[in-house]
Image (cartoon, rainbow, N blue to C red):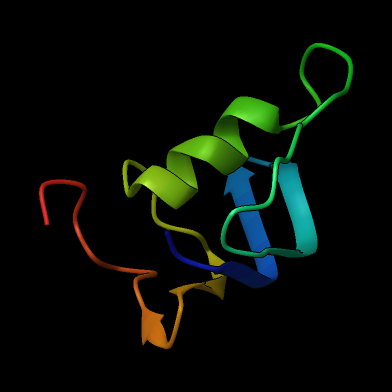
Length: 74
């Protein structure tokens, strides 16, 4: 298991800001839930963590390795 750290993650689609400076740390072994209304960015955040989307700003770390621009197949 790894620790996932998200620093100042921002994503825009066209003129809409979908994620704005998101900061989050999920420690290894921690049970974590994303809850919120439709359209609040839950799926967009998960797609960034999985490597399907590249953020406009910010960084994603798995333990000590930055994976922000690492493709999903890696």
